[in-house]
Length: 320
Length: 258
Image (tube, rainbow over all chains, first blue to last red; front, side, top):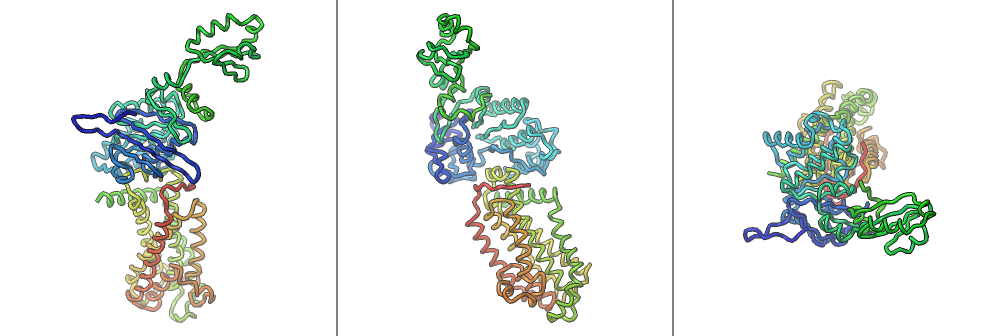
């Protein structure tokens, strides 16, 4: 999310650099010119409604799809010209849980670790490390088919983390995971970044992005609509508001500046919601107050940013 | 070196997966043994009538059923690809450090070995259990067996490339087994096939496999008699490889089912 740093006279490549990436499936444009830089140690939350292009983007970075145009570099290595070398730096957990059902947890980890070049003692140590980190130690001899959804999801994520890749791509990693698994995964993702890995974290759960303290890219209809730190996005795109719910919205509220009416709710955008709420309550007559059913002070949030940026496509999002 | 290691690791994983569910593999051996037991006495008159008065039927039925049931390898190869889609491991495998060639070879080579083993086992069972008396040295069949297995595996790769769903691939496997078995002269001796069937027989790998086997087992020829069938089978393998290479799109979404 920033320009490359100069270090000891040489340029340090970012973990991920995406320039002008386009992708279309037939006549449907999935990505329409994406530019993005993710630095080492950074978590980038990739947000967007279904069909926005998140998975296309992540799979292009992972090297499993080709961009029609544009370039992707992982640790300075072009993912098309030096595909195999680039893939060595990427850990990828696709959206759908991908593990060999007939094999045990250990056999799954062993297979992908051996593909990554681990052998003998190093192989055993890596499997033990991942088992410990992802809470799989006691499940090692269980077949993937016999795991719960959350356990399988942990195995799926563990495979992506084999060999401590400097760039980790997690495409909706907590879908179907229970609260404990989700919390543990988030904590581990934070640890990965603290250890210097760049993490691209695609999610529908806005709260996870906030919990991770990630920078945010909101992608919609194939383009990045907003990009920055959580704080900067809140400043630029979200506003606080106060919402009144009545049996019937009083006519005088309908004409206030910054008001939007949604059924029986009047939402008034304001920089000081408490003050605005007090003022409006003082102005309402007894009959209108009798019809008041609810009052809510809305603070700036990532959800507000998202709704503001992707106006017209918010229904797909799950705020928590 | 790295590529070889990837092929070895993927092939090892395939063997692990096959070992976890050996039922399909057992079909390769059990199915022909059952059919041989029933068909050998029944087809003896036809084999004798086709110019082999001393045959007991097994000399035709054993290689016939072996080559026909070996076609099941085609289905096993397509399963190997479609199950990756069903488990959602295909994308993961492609994102690994293994290249496309290593993935293909790693998945194909264990099935080639399986095809060879199956044919050797059935021919061996023919000798031991069904009194099949080969006039030529059965060792002369080894290059033919290898060529036929390569051809079937490549046919499986091409089918996996062309089919969009596991059901389509399954249908191709079963229809192919019966159709190629019948046209190739594995059901009944070639001489008894209708004229129209005889005219299209040579386009099937089964025909060439049966021709080579007949040359050695019934006619008593040696290695030289299998040269032409081997060459044709390897040519077919190459052709199917080209079809597979043109059709196989690694990023194509397929519907797998388990």
